[in-house]
Image 1 (tube, rainbow, N blue to C red):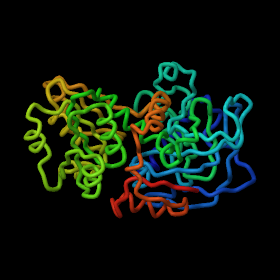
Image 2 (cartoon, rainbow, N blue to C red):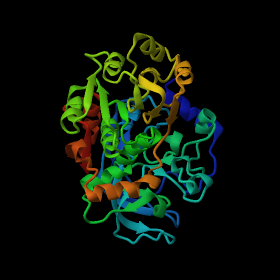
Image 3 (cartoon, rainbow, N blue to C red):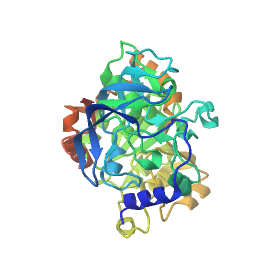
Image 4 (tube, rainbow, N blue to C red):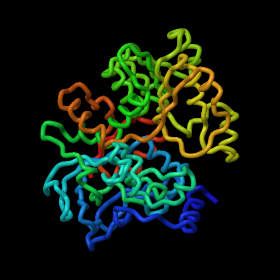
Length: 414
């Protein structure tokens, strides 16, 4: 049985918790739209589906004007993250125009907005504390509660472990609690910059925030995908003395080197830990894991994952812990979803490291990030390598997954 089939079976047995959003799958109108639909492992399709409509006073209906593929969407594409069901509409980074709204929504019709990937209610204890990805009322999954003790918030287009909400790789999306989850965008910020406030810009900032990057710091970032590259730029904005990008993909290292001017390590050609030791003998102040659970490097963890003895490999975290100085900080912004063997707990304790991980509380960060876009201090344009239409997205998943054609971040018009 696949992990998705097992999760679906557990979901039926355990049932669901009540939620503040009223429903996760939206009410459907008689009209149709196009969307990207998950049909199984490495099987994304451009299909005609019912157009959603609003059902709650706090809802809006967004006509999507731009969307993209997130690196974490590849976990869905490969079938390695539990909770996906055939027919799920994917995508959690999107923006658009408010076309319909419920009676309690303050935002006017016609407002151009970015939508946060994380669905927050705005009134629970976690939301009041600004910890929006810990929202206690938007994810009905009892499976997630059993797995983690408490469930993450609801997330658009990311499967039933986070609610089963329809996603933003579509022509229209129903957005609950619009006044919390939508950010109005001023006219001086174009779509091809504003879109990335939905996730990547704020998530990359959160990576640096968890590592407490400050002026004079040395920062190592494992993984030069969109989040890693965006975090490298934030580290520069925050005053880091040195930023080191680590990847095995040459075109991504080229962007890091040429567009950002940071030092780079190609792990296929260089010994990562030895090179860092030579460059920074006292160790790095901050190490950021922007790679994730899928990337087993050694045969031991490749075998353990193949035999399902572990779901996640801790190898990148272990390298981060080894490379960090005593009393250093390790920020894990990459996705991890299960269990890992040989976790470096001894290194963390002996070196007095502080390790922090978690999803970005986007609604707390995005107004600050928007101002950085407006002043030009932060410009995400260097991330965008491809422009396309929604109908091209299924093929783009394959290209992105295989690290082909220099693809880093795509900008999609429906």
